[in-house]
Image (cartoon, rainbow, N blue to C red; front, side, top):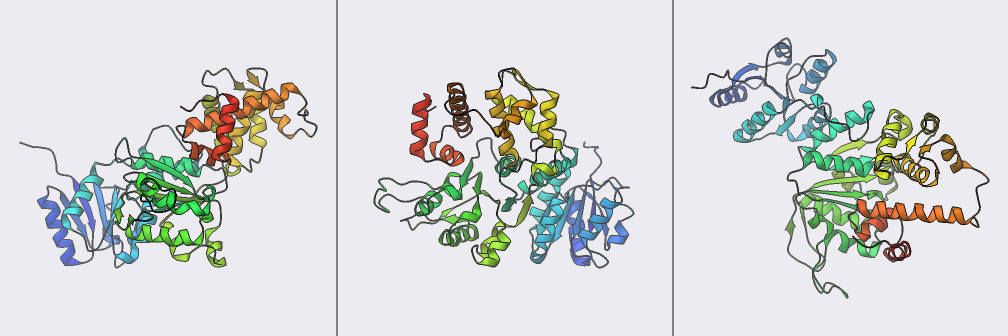
Length: 440
């Protein structure tokens, strides 16, 4: 005999027929349900009663569910995992509430079985704010909050737009989102830099092609959308996508299916789409260089990553992370003077610039202890000339290390590595041959 007490639910629903129907169903499923028709009626009990979940309509007669949620947060109440019921026109409000801490939402009309399944899931879920795992996007309050938002968004598969200056870590954030969403341990993460693909090749790269679709198409090839099916597709620098490709991308997002170049069969897609840019897409829409309908399609959830200069507490955390990656034997360390110098820098190139500075310091420093002088050399107005054989050797070592690190990051995929380094595949092959790097 099961003596475990039933879980208690708090239901906010002003419609008497809907409220009674939901209460009856929840109790049939083994829950206890307290039903309130207004926010004011429920407010004294939320946080003071042991509710396993709060289920609230977004539209209530005395205040909106969003206003109630905000008030409870401002009062410092312990809010149970919250699921909002919303009409189609309020989906954007529900998504905003997810970013602020809500657990889930469901749109009207809905199937009762689906609602019950969501409620059971919400009741089992620990609050995201209670996560104790190590930070992966930084230790600043801004980045910890961003992690929480990404985790919540990952549960819904909504299209995400990540913006921020070059080098702030947009791809890193996309990978974090993918990790949170991870449907299986083998779900793919495919990253594509739209600005690095020649316009003439972009259609085939994104959507794939059938054998014989054009001269040189000697076999069928899957595009990146198909490759990312079941996982995450990250389209970086979406603002660089030419207008004709914007039209095709819009159709793929709307229809959730892709047709290869030269093909006729639509192929269904099930993936998380994440787009990113350092450009102002809203301004581009106004200028007519970016489609307005596409902008709203990819901007369902907007994540803005602040520049490194606005979260200086992350600088030394990332410095140690980069040092561990570059020097896994832990032979190098920074002197306090070097750390202070890093904290004083404006870092216009953000994390990318910081990492390159750490790599350069590891190569150029003759001692295990890296001093501030090593970083001062970056702004030296009278640097050694290239006639210095010592300098040439160090530069070659530095270049080889950067190429090797990039190859390893991308699993020795030539196209992705060349794209990250800003060089052609041919140039990459030549450099690998020059530095004696064999393809892994």
